[in-house]
Image 1 (tube, rainbow, N blue to C red):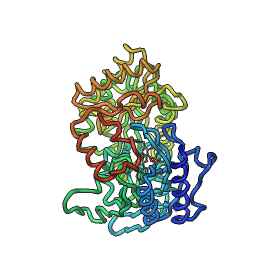
Image 2: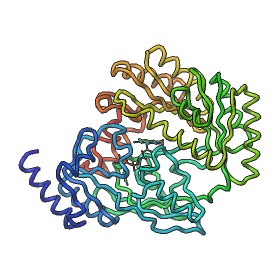
Image 3: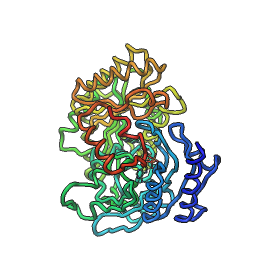
Image 4: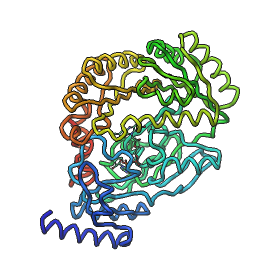
Length: 454
Ligand SMILES: Cc1cc2nc3c(=O)[nH]c(=O)nc-3n(C[C@H](O)[C@H](O)[C@H](O)COP(=O)(O)OP(=O)(O)OC[C@H]3O[C@@H](n4cnc5c(N)ncnc54)[C@H](O)[C@@H]3O)c2cc1C
């Protein structure tokens, strides 16, 4: 850093102290190193507590051209196209309050820094839950989940972030506060700015509050853990389930590399080439009972090898093991990459087959999980950098041939720096213009998202 920018930085840190108090502004290697992202260590980390404080910080940063990185739980900062600057981290961990639980209208208004699991605990006391369940809910915040449009298995029954988030309060990159959407189900007149913030990766604004849709806690839940020797039979069962009057809350699949520990947790086992299908159902006891019976019969008709049914606490324990798969597969192995293929639901079996064929021909170790109700296939690929570059190119083509796309969600930094990780699309020019219009000085998450659009 040159002398001028160092002086500008110090003046900015002083300003931050005036806005939120010096104890909420940390500088120095020890405090800032844990917030290193994409190889960039910020010079300061700030902990605002209100939307107004965020707005004042962003306004000051915009005036001084200081780049800002919004930070939720930090569970997935190193994803997507790389940042190219990160002067100050705006950590929302102190913005962790439930602002208003409106039981009559099935909504809750929260500050964006509340951790998903913590919110669920508070809601459960009132017999509600919020059905957004991405991988890392013990750490990820509601703001972070909205920012990256993170969905989980329960989307099969309850829908996506865009169906579950009714309103967002955000601070624009120039420091204005905007309220979009609201408590009502129909709450947009004109362009839906609330949805614009969903999946904008913190490049168009800092989300500070959100209004979320709630559901009553289900009376009971069940999980069927079904193994198949032939994956095709598992995908056939998925098609039949989706075309039946049954309404499972989640239908997940794991191959033997990804699903072994889950199978073991249920007292079962997966041999090479076999797959595990998990079908969850929740709701009133009678409905769940019918699901349990009908799904088991369908599984048998599709030559399932084993079917194990777990209920309530047992079901939650096995489900927790499944939810740990993503982290276990990525582990500490710096040469593992996580890709995500999204294809029409009916083509998921074909994408699975193609992925296996391609991995074998490229000599790349691969684990697979799938959200079958949404046509999403996660691949965990381990290999040398050259092999990973080659295989991801082929997987992109395979997904495109099936009318879908393949993107790289998580990868070693060196890989993310060199390889185009997002799929080609025709609307990137418009996205770039939106970014320039909202953030003319490019201070919010510079490089992220728009920086990777080719
Ligand atoms: C592109 C992407 C897609 C993902 N999709 C899925 C998925 O489909 N299913 C799944 O289970 N998991 C998914 N994940 C992983 C996951 O759910 C994240 O771990 C989680 O949502 C991040 O929450 P966090 O609070 O830890 O945010 P962080 O890891 O702290 O931040 C993640 C990103 O969001 C920005 N951000 C964080 N908070 C805010 C805020 N309040 N306002 C504006 N920007 C903010 C950050 O700047 C950063 O770019 C995805 C992750 C990424 C990056």
